[in-house]
Amino acid sequence: MSILSRRGFTLGALGAAGLTAACGNGIGSKGPQTIDARVDTTLNYLYDNYPSTRSLADKSTGMLVMPLVTEAGLGIGGGYGRGALRINGSTVDYYSATKGSVGLQIGAQQFAHVLFFMTEDALSRFRRSSGWAAGADIEYVFKDVAENLRAETTTSIAPVVAVIFGQAGLLAGVSLEGMKYSRIIP
Image (cartoon, rainbow, N blue to C red; front, side, top):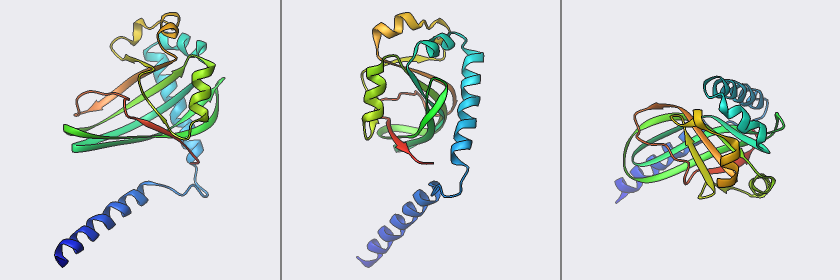
């Protein structure tokens, strides 16, 4: 009995230490500058490799840019990333993206994604929420079809368009379903 409780305590303490180590307190950090630099690099990559996304960005009311989301899973999985919400080319807020999953899975991967808010209402709902979860109102555009993306057709389909790109790793499939976005102070 005591071995089990010590083991449970040790595992819990190690897990808490890992989570604490992964989070910065933000005091005196260069978090915002780092995130903004990564967002700029990500947008440049997106526009250079998928030029049609530039017109999508021009028609959007705002963009949430997540330069790097890392996922890993072995039965139980999770993911995390940080990014910025840009309106009219300026950063207005910073967000984290977290994801949890359970199922038949093994591996790890990293990817970038941008959520294009195509209506003022969609952007307002996102900004007002205490934690917004990606759901059915998102139209997904993966890298193999992003070249054919047209802003005129996507705005009539969904108020939010997700472009997922830069995938690397050995975990099959990328979806933003179940991804929760929360405002942070980096």
